[in-house]
Amino acid sequence: MRNSFIKRALLCASLLSGLTMMPASAANAANDYPSRPITMIVPYSAGGNTDVIARLLAQRLGESMGQQVIVDNRPGGNTLIGTEAVARSAGDGYTILLTTLTFAVLPSLYKQLPFDTLKDFSPISLAVTLPNVLVINKEVPAQTLPELIDYAKKHPGKLNYSSTGSGTSPHLSMELLKHMSGIDAVHVPYKGGAQAMTDLLGNQIQAQFIGLPVALPVIEAGKLTAVGVTSEKRSEIAPEIPAIAEFLPGYAMNPWFGILGPKGMPAAVVQRLQEEIARVLREPEVKKRLQQLGAEPVGSTPESFAEHIKNEITLYQGIIDAAGIKLE
Image 1 (cartoon, rainbow, N blue to C red):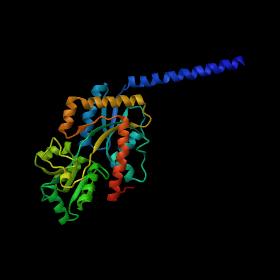
Image 2: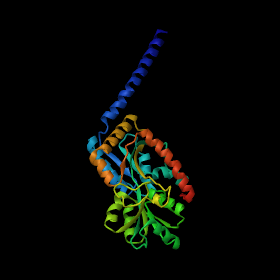
Image 3: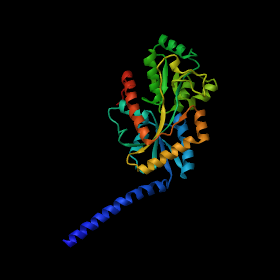
Image 4: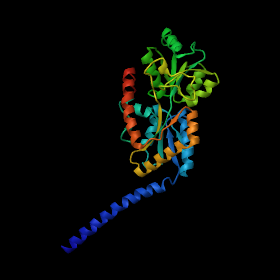
């Protein structure tokens, strides 16, 4: 009996010791993190607005955390290639994803995905929001959105528009415009924004929704005509460009950029990353740079970002159903 009692006592002591060590281990994981470079996977090609924002954040995060943050562009598959790579990565905080609202659109586009957007990722922070702007080639006989709508109605099927893939914010921005204005336009998806811009400038494509960071230089150079931004109000950095809602009341699309990791990340590591992201976004120079690009820094909590993703999935399900978009 005495030996049995001693064994049980030793077992309980061992379990209690393990439990008391767990918080310390979690704390140590956060304190030691990062001890090597972090890879930030971007599921888009270099040169687009997602890449611009990713490289700005990666540089400042690397300086802030004392380890290099490497931007790894993995375009293709409508963001599935890069996103799946993160889903299959170890949940140790050394592989993270900078993605867009397309992440919340994927469940509505595909019957089957190689990952679960709600279960296979650890939301870290909603980083930035920014509007798209609708730009058209100079050969299109229109200077304003009403003129473009009139032209499209008089020439159904003649207007081609590009996007960085089905279900991306440029694609959904145009689908919402088509639905609300009654126009017809042909969707031409591209793997990345750089080639789409080249073809738009060459008039192989007539129209494109694109983020302000990439569009402003060509707009200001007079190479393209800007006819409207997707935000509810005009952008402070380009107040001369009207909001589409001025012509189509109720129109609004608010593209976002957020950071997630694989599932199973230690809570302390998620918190460390979120705090660093939020701190970097509050830096005057970073905030100024983002605002010059037309972007609004956010830096939300993981919990808030997770809720935002759920709400976005519901929102875009309605748009996709109305447009009849479905991919296999």
